[in-house]
Structures are given as structure tokens and as C-alpha cells.
Length: 602
Image (cartoon, rainbow, N blue to C red; front, side, top):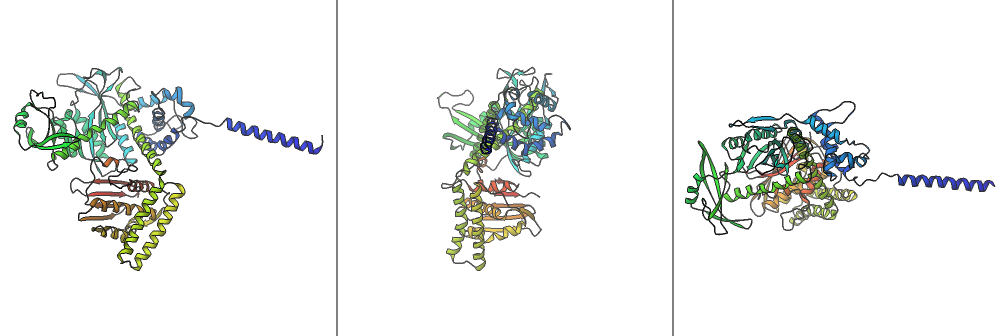
């Protein structure tokens, strides 16, 4: 064989070996149908794991799994459409173990971890001598609220509306009791703020809902207050209408709204009542009124009465031609309609329990005893936090696909202010320089935005907060003057160093003030911007935020304006989150001012 031929053979064989290696590499590529869960696992690891291990402590120091890994593995079962804990071993382990860094533990380890986190039941004895078991899960409830605070879903120092109710979980566990619904199970008391569960205490299914309810509520309120979370308004059904429960709620909230139980002694007063006001609420005609009653000796409250005419013509033995519903409250300023509409919003909380039962496994508890199953209930509430966050992120991802609308939105905001200055003919040299800088900054923003098809990563630099607000003054003043709105800046003289991206910060401030101006509308309005070290507060006396709108404020493309795009608050949220700021937007029911509060990391 010639030297040339030998060379060709060697080249051919070498090429074949390389080709075969490539084929082997392609065939051995690890592809899993459950790879989508990896993103959620990584988020859980980044935001939730440190809080769990910090609050519960390390489970092991050398070998074994930490509590955070156990919680994450349990979460992965239900986020992968599993039905029970055992699915992680029988179906999911070969797929979840493909993650290069995050470990997934077996079902046996998960069940051992749940047992380790359980706390002993507390037994209460009734006046008739019957005993009922409660499980407070104190440590896990503390962990639950701490996670909500650490992920900025609850902001320390703020006040919120809280709902409380009892749920019935049908199960045939060893210690399950027969409920009045004619099935065996548990009846946990659950406290909710918005769409977030903030407390769960389990109890025997045959326990009366009022039995020691005030103790459960006291623990929930104390847990929240220990994290500087306060309750503005509390809503509950008639199962909470007893003197001890009402006094507990009144101590820990500014106002309460509790469905009053039927009382025959009040019927004569209701039937004789005059001055009923006709209202249409959700398409149904009601008559509303309110009176002051001494519900219990020495305890005087307001009773808001809602009555509806019987449609079938049949008269109730006690109530006659109307059906009466009453709300007991210590709110003496709101109108009866406002109170009824606010109370009716609690009906939407049932969706949360549907999610827990059908999506996060409340209906399939893994252990035989209430103490261990209560830990599972609370851990599921942690998963719901992450589930809701994932839903929001998916909605935001869809919004980014329509990125051109957001860019146009920002261009219009900035250019409109500059054009208005020019049309007024009052532009000074410093205004021209400021406009030029603003256009340059806008160009940088749009370029960076378009490059990554999302909010650009902030280029942080150390700045003084008051100085950055002052730099935006010309644009903010012109924005307010064109709408005949007064603008006041109360900026601290103290040094207030913050690490921010000045371009993105200007976008945030302009958007917040623009929203405030639009909320004020045609009325005489005032916007104040107050800075204190590491905090900025923008307040306005506009229309305010209705309770029904508040949960949707930061939802992509949600807007209450006829021509609104629903992008401004989304942009603000993205930028502030990227700066690791905590923030809140709410209307204070006392002074009726709407405040956007931004807390910068120290």
C-alpha cells in the first residue's frame, strides 16, 4: 500500500471514529419530560431554601438531606402532577436526579422529615368533659410567614386585610373524627391575606368551630405581629361571632367584619326599622341599613343589615317576606354598601382551598396522625407561594413577547414631557440640557431593553437618594403642572446612599408620578415625594385603589383605564425587584391617601 493510500485510510478511520463519537454523544444526551420543573426547583433553592434551613436549623452536618431539600423534593411531586409522596420514588426520581446540582430525596426520607417537623397535639376539654385535639404547628407557621416576608410578598410595617375560616378535609386517617358534614376528617382553621395562606392550625373534625377559636386567632395574630405585619381589616363568617373571639379580633385589627349569627331577639327591631336604602350589588337588588346594638353586655357595635325580598313568594316564619343577613363591625364611617361589598369579597378565597386540595395534595395526606399531617398542610402552603410566583412569572414572560408595546409606552412617557416643555415655550438652558440627558438615557434604556427582550440588569452605582429625586424635578413638575396638580418634595438632608441604576430609577419615578396624576384626574390634587434614609414615599390624594382591584395591580396588561396598556406598574415591579427593593402600593383608609412606598436594601 502506498504512503498516500495509507494516509487516506487513516484519515477515513479517524473521521469515522469522530463521527461515531458524535453519534454516541447525541444518543446519550439526557432529555427528560420533567425538565421544566428544574427552573422552579432552582428558584425554590435560591429564595426559599435559605429561609427554611435558617429557621428550622440544619438537619445534618455531613451526610443526609436538609429540611430545605426535603421540602423541595415534596414540592416537585405535586408540580410534576404527582398524586402522592411515593410518586417521587416510583416515577420521578430518574428524571429529577438529572439536575446537575440539586438533589432529590426518596419518599421515605420525605416522610421521615415530615414526622421530625411535627409537634405534639394540644388537648382542650369542653365544659361537658369531651376532649378535642388541636395541632398548632407553631414553628412551621412561623416559617411560613418568614418566607412570605423574605420573598417580599408581605412587607414589614404594612397593614393588610385578613380572612379566617375553617376548612373540612375528608380523610379516613387513624385519628380522624366524624364531622357535621357526615364524613370523617379534620377541620383546620386557616388565615389568609390576599391569595397567601399565613397560618394553619389543625383540629379534630368534630370540634365546634368556635371552640377555642380565640386561642388559634391569638397565635396567628401574634405570629404576624412578631414579623411587624399588621392587620387593617379582618373578615370572618358567623362561626366567629362570639364575645371572646370578637374581643380577640378587635385587639389585633383596626376594623373587623363578622357575619352575625341569627338572633330572634333582633327580629322585632329589624322589622320595625325604617330608612332602608335600595342598592343593586352584582346585579341583585338589596335594601341596606345599619343600627347600633349592644351585642353583649357592655359591648356596643354597629350592625349592618342587608335584606333581600323572597323571590318565590313564600314567607319565612321569622323573617317574613325578606331574607336578612347582618354584619357585625366596629367600622362606623364606611357606608353600608361599602361594608357589604367588602365582606362579599371573602367568597373568592374558596379558590385557594381548591388549589390546595386538587393541586397541592391536601386531599391526600400521607401520614396516619393529625400531628404529622399538619406539618404537611403548612408545607403545602409554602408550595402555593412558589406556585403563585411561577404563575406570575409565566404571565410576565408572555408580556415580554409583546415587548414593543412596553418600549412605545416608555418612549411616549419621556418624549411627552419634553414636547410639553417645548410647547410651553418656557424651556431654560438647564431644561434643554436635562431634556438632552433624558433622551440619551431613554436611548440607552431602549437599546438595552431590546437586546435582552426584558428589563435590563441594573448597572448599580452608589448614589444619594435625595439627589436623584431632585434631578428628576423638572420633568415631574411639568408633568404635574400640565394637569394642574401640585407637587411637593420633602427630601431629607441626611445622607441617604443607595445602590441604584439611575436610568431605571428615573423610569420608575416618572411612571409612579404619572399614575398618581391620572388617579387625581380633574380634581385639585397634591402629590408629595418624601425621602428618608433608604426609603422613598410617593403619596397622592387621588381616587384611591378599590379592594377588588388591589390584587391585580401588578398583573401584566391589567388596567382600569379605558386606554390603559397595563404596563406601567409591571415595569415598576420588574425594576424594583431587580434592585432587591421591597415596595407596596395601597390606599390608607384613615387619611384616604394612596402611597407607593419603596424600601431600598441597606
